[in-house]
Image (cartoon, rainbow, N blue to C red; front, side, top):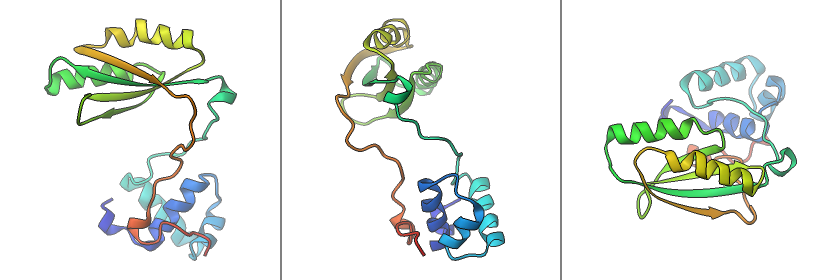
Length: 166
């Protein structure tokens, strides 16, 4: 769904669902000032368009035993569609990699990796990352503390993505 086809109500629905993906349709409708049937239709349309890609529980990394977060900068020795495809397919197969971003600047990619311990990270690094195709450089930075994690996307550009209280 293109941004232009979303209105203020869509933005308010998206904001409310980002805050609480388990909200009932009746409560959601009330928060965005719609009746339940049109609200549900809008949610279904947002899902079908791909604006809503899924629903999941947000977990506390430490409480589920994932206390180590590493950001791994990677450069490739070649640049081309096939090299990139192979690299990304290999990265996708590593469960500990929770995000991967292509970059401009000094490095080609940054990976966010979570593990339960430094020993587990060492195993991922030595046994998995070290064997990624066409990697010419790897640099790791460890997270000492997270002070803000992106929990919701800012939707103010859609005209109404902020306040969903009514």
